Length: 156
Length: 157
Image (cartoon, rainbow over the protein chains, first blue to last red):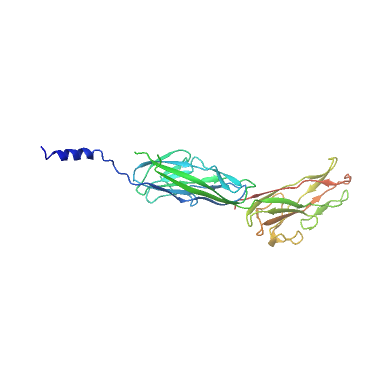
């Protein structure tokens, strides 16, 4: 009887050991770059282009995550703002390995809404396009803004 | 609770604003009733001159709104004005109306349908315009005028 007690205790503890998730990273790997813009001429960057914003997420394969953007309304320079718009289809997500920006697996997503998807073996790529609308008398200069992407595991 | 957050930049460079200025009137000078008078785009002191400035070498669209008549200030009389299909020239090198040639841009162009053009490499392009007035034999004496409106915009290229 004395010899069996430690074995029972060890088995009970094992039931409460949590599963271990791998670490997750999210990084901005490409800027949303509109390049040179003429006053009065709107310019669009599509999500499939090399000028689209790109975020790279790594983590536990097949884990479900939510993606939430915090999008700017303007690009700014000293003494000037320029409207920037994002349409309801300006975002694309892809979990394939290697990533396929030209034909992403989860395409035409609304960046203003929470996007839920699963990480692939190589994580996730997220691309974002947009449009800027400079005024006729838009001040010349370099404009910029920050796009924030928050990634959260759902636990599923 | 967020597991990861990344901030990505969005960037753009806005180029020089485009401007258009009426630099010189289309001046027909003195005319006689019943005697039409033409003014070419190549007259340094009498052709209309519009000056457009903007981003060097950028594509632009030019559109003229041309009057059909010149009028007395009090509106009591009008005189037809006509613009032919060769009455305009576009100069990207900012020479002069009398010296502009094909190598300087576009010559002998239709002011009712101007070609797509560019801002000159120096940041300036000029439009020269001529025309023709046709006074009647009993045209009322006086000083006649009309507005010529030039609209310019970038093509985005």
